[in-house]
Amino acid sequence: MHRLLARQIRQSTDESGKVDLTKLGELVSAAYEESDCDRRRTDRAIKLMIEELEQTHKRAEQDLGRAREFLDSIIENIPIAVFAKDAKDSRYILLNRAGEEYYGMPREEMLGKTPEQIFPDKIARAVNEQDRRVVDSGTPMFLEGHLLEVGVKGRDRLVNSRKLLIRDGSGAPQYLVGVIEDVTERITNEARISHLAHHDVLTDLPNRSAFNAALGERLERAQEAATSFAVLSLDLDRFKEVNDVFGHPVGDMLMRAAADRLAAEADGAFVARIGGDEFMILMPDDISREDVLGLAERLVETIGTELEVDDYLPHVGLSVGIAFYPDDGVNAATLLANADSALYRAKREGRGRVRFFESEMDLELRDRRLLQHDLRQALELNQFLVYFQPQARVDGEVIGFEALLRWNHPTRGFVPPDQFIPLAEENGLIVEIGEWVLREACREAASWPRPLQVAVNLSPVQFQAGDLERSIHQILLETGLTPTRLEVEITEGVLIGDFNRALNLLRRLKALGVRIAMDDFGTGYSSLSYLQSFPFDKIKIDRGFISNLEATPQSAEIVRAVLSLAHALHIPVIAEGVETEAQRAFLAREACEEMQGYLVGRPDLIERYLDLIGVTVERRLYA
Image (cartoon, rainbow, N blue to C red; front, side, top):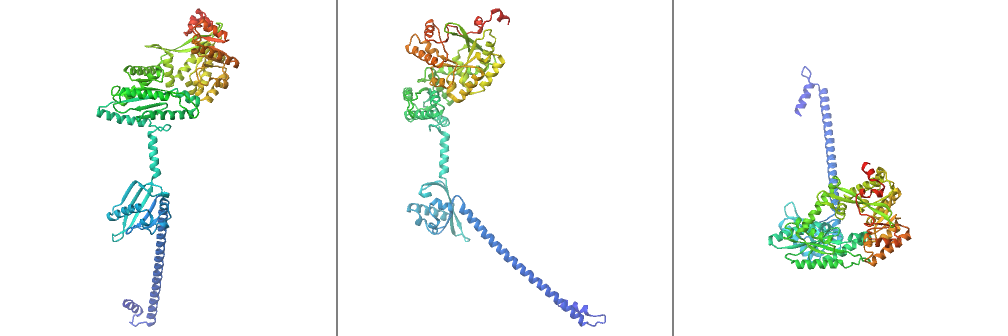
């Protein structure tokens, strides 16, 4: 201040040293005015600062309030029960909405109360004991899958619970905070999923995975203890026929009934359904062959008894193959393969049988697999042949030929069709083979001077896979054969799989001009209904009825009935397997139109029947 006044005096002194008081007054007055302005500016700055601090504090309080609301909203809406208690007496001071739902009571009935005032004595004591343990130790408590006897609407629940201690600023216990997650449904679903992963959905028996695991454990135990045990491979006989005829719902009920009978009769043995109509049974350790055979025979008997299913009485049977550890295999793969070999033998010998594994069965199964492997190369190596068997009117006039597939194996020679055709149907190769037969038969027939018909068998697999209509149409175009000269023979197996699809396909084939014949008539379940559904061009009476005409009166009556039905429906009939003049005479008396069999001619290469097709030997040699 003094320095300011000295500066003002100097500024007011002239050259003679005289002070100009007027000027000095002006300077002092200006200094006071400037100081007053600075003070006012400072006051305004302080005021603005105070206002800003007030606003900041207000915003902080608002943010804090919003944070509290946000936190309260989060806690309130967390989908698991959240609670807080006073650490001193376990009195509830906070409970969210999920907690209300879990405990089955409004929070007003819990807040401010201790466990003794809320829960039954036993539960209250357990809750208090847990709380004291957490408070005394300071260690959080974790319980997984814990069964609580109190829960939603009073029902017992499985929960995951967490409880921890919160201390105040001085380190003293202040709050107990916990969460309870109801995992009852989750654990139940996990148990259900685990059950489904190891059990068959239809029968609730253990499935293939569970059986393999049980077999693995049994093998380990048997190896350590030097014990033996038996494995049974079972297959329902004729189940597919029942399933196709009566439908899948009845088939499913039949499967469940059969599974129940197997499980009940097995008397504690491990029974599993490994797929389709196949079952496996794992027998106890050191069981005798006599006891295993006795059980297997009881199983065959109990399944062989007709099962009444929803007013149906479908008849199925059971075949059983048996293998023993360690005699028939020391590992799972060998043991199961040998049990299957024994089952295959049982089914081949007539079904409804029990067979123990024998060493030659393994060779037989290996041979079957080798034959199936060779079958894949037969087409490429041109090992298949088409034989032709004449078809004639009953008076002897040849009207056509049936094309029959033969396999000339390079080392085995001619393999019977009933051996390799089922194998081809199993692996799907029958589609390609069937197309080859059709093409060869049509190509050959198109070259005959006489316009005789040619009949070709179709497998049900050809109807289910591939494009049969396109294939036949293309072959007719390629070979130039008139469609009306081609007759395709089907069994009812073509129709019982997917009836509507097969029926539509047959109608499209008929629209091409191709003739349709019902083969093996009278040997299945539903031939009569099929005759009503589709206008067949011909019916073939199965050779089994013809061969027994002279020996069995019932066969003669069946043939008469079929012929009478066919005549009423105006459908021609051809009889298969005619070998004697007596059989031909019977058919002639009953007005059967056509016949096929050794009496007319045996299946052979077409060269044997050149005269019948109108080709001279010279023309054939030089054509």
